[in-house]
Image (cartoon, rainbow over all chains, first blue to last red; front, top):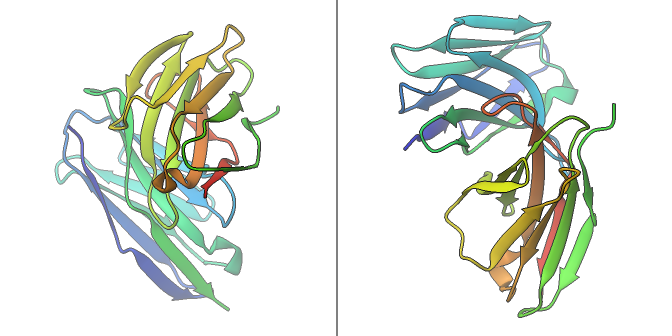
Length: 112
Length: 112
């Protein structure tokens, strides 16, 4: 079945800098890759997603890139702000077992 | 449009008791997913319901069960509670298999 690895587990950046979080997946049949932001005490919020027929997707300060050959996808946050501080999870839809497989999360701290 | 709602927000039970958690999906969504998130850990897939049927379950014992009602709301039951069942239980809904999934705020279950 699918396996998703996420790095780094923690990331500290200065306000205004960029942050990059990377996930690798194992099943080449996976075709949908969402990213979630989870703030303390809240449920995960879908922030951006990408399908396997697209290499990059952007939404204001966040972007996701997908490399199907290398089987990895990354979240890019530019001009980080303190409110970007949260735990970020990547996921992949495993079409073989019909479930989403989540990465272990990255705790992002944006230092003012 | 109302998001996914969950009740109760918090639930405190004693070991051996039963817990019932409820979820209402976004209007028009027919799929409901349940996840367990232990403190500081990632999301572990529990159950998936679609159109009233259980479609998939994760690696959890049979004392974790649930159902989906005709209005697509769902209930998660945990029998014979154990201390390690203490976690945040998240519900998510989707209108498309393998598509965007939206989470509720979760139910914090504490077993003493």
